[in-house]
Length: 301
Image (cartoon, rainbow, N blue to C red; front, side):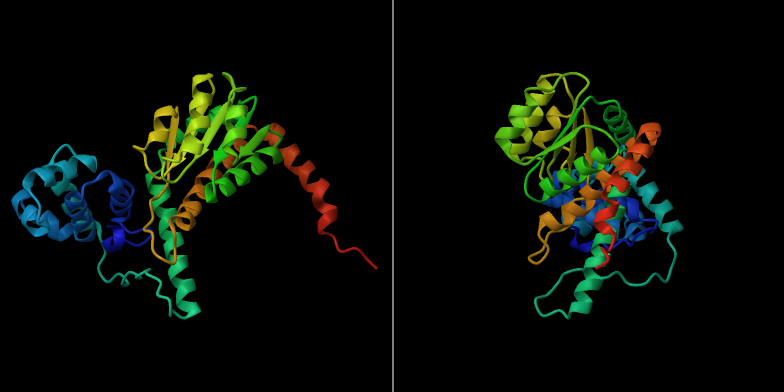
């Protein structure tokens, strides 16, 4: 659905386009058509009545109203006013958006350009949709945790390892688990004051949901990093951090696009925790750097 949403990074319509991409999986196909229309042409849609927009998108007036509400507006009138304001802000003469579909016979230079653009858009969408209140609460929990367990499978497992390595370097106790049996076994040992983090783009990976549920039931503070804010994993999460749901293609699977947004969230968590614990984090970082420095020196022969 998001193929047609072409707002560039930093553009006035970027936040609306990002919201449309994030909520796409929560919409019916008819609602997606309405959302895509308003994100792509706010000026044109602002000039339409609810009936006109319904006719333009081949949907019903009720669908238009439901879409407006899902996008955060009390009704279509409020959405229409917001679109009019957005249209007034937009500058003319923007460069045409890049089409990010990668063909099998694309030159490598085009592949680089398209992937770079898509990565940039993924980061922009994630930043625009990230709930900073939830992020702050997650940082507070991590900064004071006795121990942190992070669950992830496949590409999300690599992100889980990245986060635990960062936390270890600032002196915190953290473990990454990609084996579901070991994850549950460790989750049983958690208690209040501990933190458990589940990383799953789909939000429905059973091997990640199960240990988070166990940790939740044992009183640990739980955090879900997911591209689906209404997915099953969130029912066991005290804090939900939503990542961008970038469009999947044949040569760019979901594992690639989700990893980019997950790493941004992980970096935000790490920097936030390092700030909160700087008196101990600073010396720990220096000590870990010094301990590894000799491995990066050239040994004279």
